[in-house]
Amino acid sequence: MIVPSRYRHLAVPFICMVSFVLFSYMVIIGNVDGIDGWWLGVNRSLEDPSIVGVFKVLTHLGSGYLLYPIAIALLVMSRGRERMEYSILLGAMASSSVLVNAIKVLFARDRPPFPSQYLSSYSYPSGHACLSFVFYWGVLLISYRRGYVSRNVALALAISLPSIVSFSRTYLRVHYLSDIVGSFLLAFMLICLFFSSCFGNTKR
Image (cartoon, rainbow, N blue to C red; front, side, top):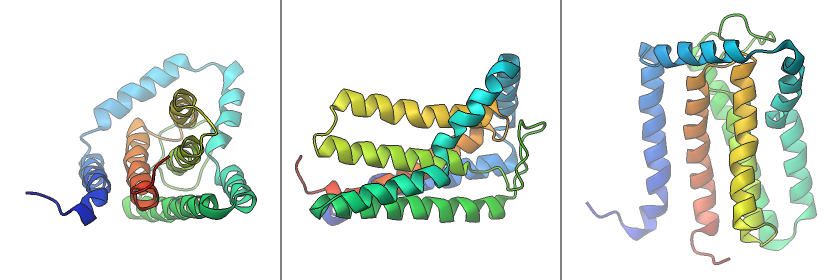
């Protein structure tokens, strides 16, 4: 079946949404428990009291208390079309936070056993991971399109920064590996959905 051109920009977000729903169902019925258990074991084997504090700091790279003020500052400092792009990024971030909190309540998945820090909220999906994916991918996409950074630098940072946040969440045992995977699918859907209309018909 051929998708009309005016709807093609929705194809990737739709695939991500379906993937997220299917993966979430796998989480509900326990199909990922084996992988989650294995990854918790890996993290326990890597645990070192001397670096737990380091990851407790690094995990804040995905905190809304840090990322929202930065996004607002970038919005205020930008002009013209770039300001619109940062407005879209803030919309994607806000959507991420709302969706993650709603899904957490819907799934009511408990945190992993023996976390390094107590959190009263539920586990699936990870708010820190999802917000870091949306924020860093969004900022680096805008920066690359504007010529502020090279493609290689943008790709390296887009991979490394969310990965540091994601690994810190599992290392501190506040999230399962499947929480991170679900966050990735949700974030990728939001980034594609919000930015396809912005960049779809523009040239760098």
